Length: 416
Length: 145
Ligand SMILES: Cc1ncc(COP(=O)(O)O)c(C=O)c1O
Image 1 (cartoon, rainbow over the protein chains, first blue to last red):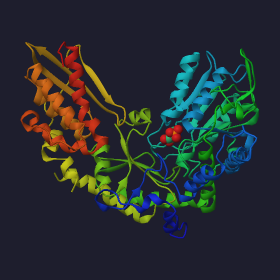
Image 2: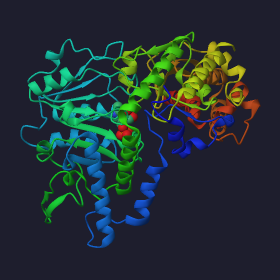
Image 3: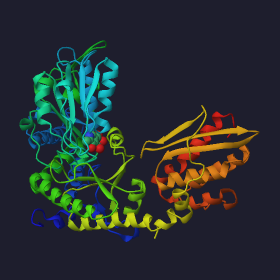
Image 4: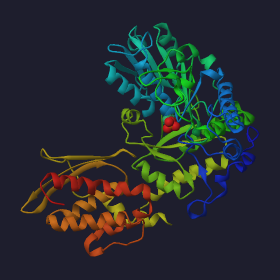
């Protein structure tokens, strides 16, 4: 299986792996679901932008400003190409969180058929990260719209049996994750997208956990908006993406107001630039956008399909190993079907925080707790889980150390 | 192993058999959560003749948070408000010390076992959760802490 990816070569591109963790252990980083590590190519791209091209984009008439604008717009083209979109449909934000807040605020401000107002319905699911729940909760509260949701099944899939009652003619927007950040489960979104479109509602896809890990094409998916974060896709922090259909973005009101997003300004009134600039107030995170483009180059060179295949291979090994450790329970999907490279588990009688602390002694970095999806954790009757998430720089020996550390956590408390 | 300085025997004992744990009673109950990890505690107490009485708590959390709640309730129960204030202050200082002080065992008793926690910044909040709930409850009951 080692032929899928040359992980040893990949690892050499990530300086973070060259240092020791507590007790001289090597780093086994299994928290890419929270944020990914960065290859040197991404850091070099940012450094190069600051070293040679740095100036405020779209403002100066001098050479550097031209170069900065070219680099920034080049990054936009790169992102568009990565997800099968048009460049002018790509809005740079600071994060997926900001992208979702932008949408929720803009859909309140936009008059006409897109506007969410009293009596309208907004649909989410119990799988959602807080970032794809709270902006919609608050939108509903501000406007008097009704928030509805799909319930989650034990295996992390969504219960679609009441889809006709959940998505009705009053529905304006449906916002669902492409993959659960907690369980790794992949909900069956196709019927939901179809139902949303059948009643004229917009479909927002949270691609935070899918875009970095598998080929995602917005045309093939037939969604209306897609959000993701650069930092989970080998890119820098402080850069996120909102993709939206041009005919939608062009009708929508801005989220933040200020420089760069205007067409004309007087002392009393202003008009807005065309999308995407309309949604990019202020000097944007230029170096970070350029870094993200380098990250997407890196992912494309390795190959998203191969990355996905490799993650599933590692997930399979880890799932098999976990099932052999007494007291360990895998939460959510039990096999490889409808899942990505994320595994949540519990150990009988142990709190995730304590489990994570022992695993840290083995150099293993995992996430513990509710993973910013508290309603999902409550629904499962848990207070938290321990989560391992895989990426292209993980290998089979990482899985071995992971399994050893899980058994170690159980034994550390069990034997005392 | 470095871990043993964190998970001392005393801590695991309190974790397995927590003291003063039960369903809080009365109207004045405080509820504190650690939003980072979802740990929760509900606590009630009474101040009678200047003393901390009837302290009882319930909650969910990691070994550190549960043991700390158990140790804290042993330490302040039946004590005067003034002594409780001294213990609270000593413990808070110890937790914020990043491992630079070892704490006064005369004052802290079993809580001295939590000294290792101060070297793990992510766990300090776990240890302090119940102490902050205690402080809040005592103040709400009119104690000057
Ligand atoms: C599914 C999902 N949605 C949204 C977010 C929010 O992303 P960010 O914190 O980068 O804005 C995350 C990140 O944890 C996530 O996993």
